[in-house]
Length: 453
Image (cartoon, rainbow, N blue to C red):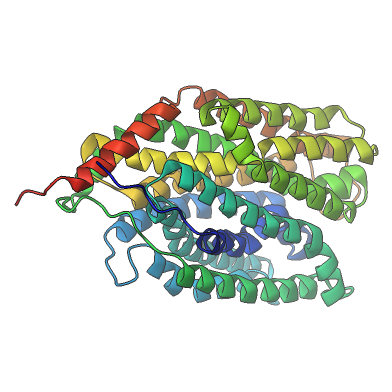
């Protein structure tokens, strides 16, 4: 009979969560402001930015499974996944800063510089974030503990999002004065230092406890065949792609909506801050939600409800700021529990794969999921650039009614459609809570069985 699994301490959960705070100091800054920085500050045409983001993110996404495979085969005194956080922290911080360094180049030089720094930054992100994500799957064998750990992760992640959304523009204005390029550069330097420090703390305060079966060989073919036979993971893969396409479109369109539709980009900071606070409130309510409903049902219902609130923005007068805030707070609160839930479900699919095939490929499971997310972000970002160009958007000028309409679609209807499709995909997720618990018990029992030579 298996012995009870020791629960993770608050300190270790919080230390793990701070790793996603570190990631989001750049990730959220890129989602909210990078497209805007490239078009309105660095001076690159929107269609060129959209194409660049698609091209480089597709190439970057291909490296995710490779990183997962490499991490699964890493063996050090620190474990498989933690050492990559240590090794990648400084390059991550440095490259994030260089993206906003704003060198004095011509039009072609600026585009080349953007391609190079953007590509290298996402490579550094892969080196750190793939092992970081997989680490959650090996810190505890308990699905309940991993759901709690995932909650800490996303509360900490969106605490960073709160800071980024609320303080990036004011900090940019304070540090740069009338020069937005200087403001962005100095702001990102601060974010870089904080990110590196937080990653190092995560590395030092976490442990890896779940090991692959001792008889498992290093066959790549078996790993990929097992992943493709993992139906729960395949469903989450599709849902992740659709969700992040939604995120890529809507987050990038936010500042354009406030600058050109509302007519005051400064109001975006409060909008982002209140939305993020509501999101954190939703994330903190994850345990309450899961106490009464299954995770699968919650993912379907909450995703669909968020889609409705996003779509409603299209029909609201942009000058009705109060109603904009109300819709934003409701939608972000409802979607708050979903990241914690879905990442705990990814860990369950790693357990399911081991249970079914007797092979554990935690790194590959999580990295291939991030691959789907990055592809979604790439498509979403590219769509934004193409739609803006198609509608006749010209940076830093009064927009035509067609361009205004395009921005409103990007901020509301288009992401709502992708969110609804994501909820539909989760409908086909086959694991329920009793089956997950049985898989945990079976895997624990296997570890007590004597191994054969």
